[in-house]
Amino acid sequence: MTLLTKENTVNVSNTAAIYKSLQTTICRTFEQADGTGKFTQDEWQKEIGSGLTCVMQNGSIIEKAGVNFSHVSGIFSENMAKLLGEKANTFEVTGVSSIIHSGNPFVPTIHMNVRHFSLDNGSSWFGGGIDLTPTYINAIEARWFHQTLKDICDRYDTNFYPEWKTWADDYFYLTHRHETRGVGGIFFDRMQPANEADLKIMLNLTCDLLKIYPVIYSQLMKDNGYKPFTAAQKKWQKIRRGRYVEFNLIHDRGTKFGLETDGNIESILVSLPAEVEWVYQNQPEAGSPEAQTQELLKKGIDWVKG
Image (cartoon, rainbow, N blue to C red; front, top):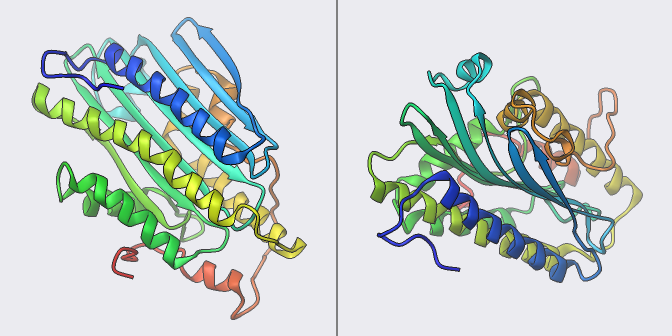
């Protein structure tokens, strides 16, 4: 697929067409990697706009996956103004968001989203990122994951990865638990380029992230999807998923924005795992793989250098 050329204008409608095409590619790639799972499609239409929610459940490796596209617009409400710190009358936004949960505890949960936001006051920006939440942290995989993201960021600006990696550490952090959600990744928001050329850079970068996302997770599925696991390891996965749910419902800005704009509730909450547990005062055994993972749930780890 061809990205915008220098003759094209970067506006939300043009971005939406590109993002929706890449959503299709992502779904087909995951179906091939899983082997048996297929995405169902739910096209939705509301007063604020439309979208396409693609969901896979109970595949060979993927337990639950959502790959969502939306393109909405409407009145910029007072609550939205408070959330974004902007004054405007109307907004328009498009994006793709995805979260995948595997049934195998050795395949991490992954999250990705990109978005292009515009206000009638002239403000226009991109946001997004990718982060990885392993049940059991594998330092070699974490290093490969971060290096892959760094390579993409460095094509555009060598400052992006270190800045956005720190941003992800700070954003994907459960303040009430004093722990990170996983090994992080990159996160960026409100990237407001000063001119059309810089807007195209951000569009191309977000498209690169959409393209690499299924490549990254397909490799993790291939490496770990059929590893044997015990009932105790599955239970640990469900406990760790509880932390994921806590973050999405308490801290995640996308969830809050979707609810505030009266978005499609099924699409907003498709990110939640199918099975989860909360165990009162759960403490992993000292020296266990579970305890080792728990000790690595902290900010500031330089995964690329190791």
